[in-house]
Image 1 (spheres, rainbow, N blue to C red):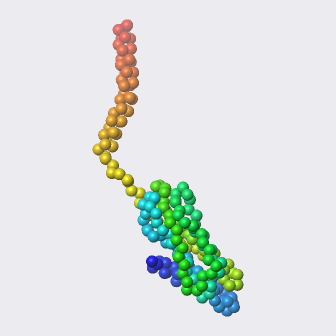
Image 2: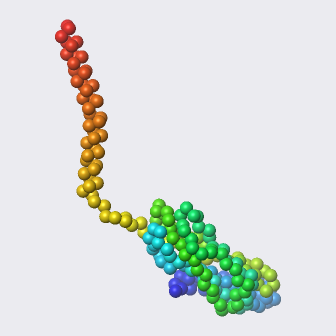
Image 3: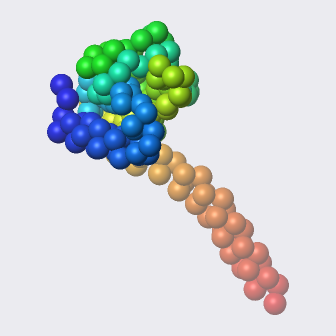
Length: 194
């Protein structure tokens, strides 16, 4: 499902692409391919190690065919993500008014990242005259929900804390008490000698 933000992006791309062509060139080349790239996730929030789908839409909103179209999605580091499927693709042509959806699956494995950036998808293509174009999607971010797997028994945690605190204090206090007793005995002996 395409959101309002993505529709606004498409309109911007149409207006921007038309306004960046010089008048002389526009007269000579009346039709050009204009590809819009939209990257979205099947979920906005995911759990740790939960699989979700990345969808990349490539839409030819121009009035001519795009040739030699190559998609390269942002590489995700293996220390934070598992990936199922390929993150690159190639099409010989994408005619006008045609949309293509490319998908692969991802899971987040790093529990230290609450908001994950999945980067931008890059699409390179050529028009019929061999002119090269490069377009990018917006940066896609998702939120990772870190959930405790089991209920924490706080009574046990406090009980263990108190026992450990008692052991630590005892291990510190006993040597101090022995030092004080010895110092007191030396004081008494010194006082008796006088």
